[in-house]
Length: 172
Image (cartoon, rainbow, N blue to C red; front, side):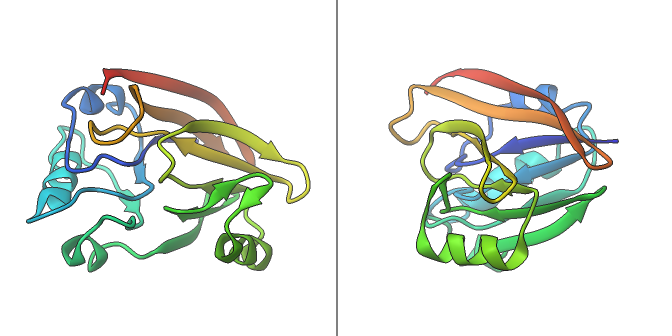
């Protein structure tokens, strides 16, 4: 069983409450837009890595991320967690309105779980056609048009994705 803490669109802001909400997570996944400008994305990253519980961080870069973040994280990640194939891209769309590049990648990789960010809109929905669960954790940062900052916690246990919890961090 792997407990996942999922967030996106921190835009250089690391809310200290994230540490508390992810305290029992085995891994943290970030779906891009860590931050902009002189190292703010890396400040966000150091906020995650300096939490009191050391754990792996997987992530992708987003459209606003600078070369410091792009040198650490790729545009797309495809990996297996337990028995679930996962694909993460910052800009992806959602079922059935994926952007063309994402649609192509989904058809190539055939993940059971697709994670994206970018829209600042929290969504958890199943794509019957692709047999794939889509998650977008919304935005955990203070920059953007969203009204409430959000993240997701969930569990992957073998082939099963379960115990999905939406956490509201407060107003933007």
